[in-house]
Length: 138
Image (tube, rainbow, N blue to C red; front, side, top):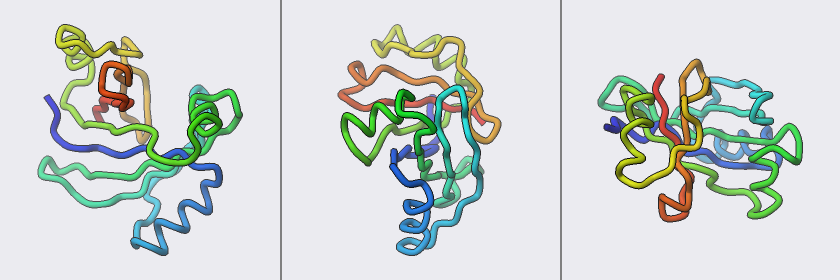
């Protein structure tokens, strides 16, 4: 069902400062930036490496555009840190349809448009041992 760890989402207060940290400390460069008004977030994708399926693994840095956004609420409650783990899959619609039979609740059905032209949905963290899991198809 899953082909790779697509990205790890990291919530941060200051996007530019966090980009500088990952660039200066690890040599990661921004390969994509966008603002998702629906989710109330500015994001930067930093490419980590290639994967066996020809795609890549990224760090997704997330900074809220407003305090009532999901990332804004996360930062207020928990502070900076890992927000979610995203797994790449060939067909996010199929995965979203099949996974509830195994237990995890799907948060967005149908999956929504996401970063870099992909489509994605999330699984409820209460069903995934406290981890917000994203499923993404590019």
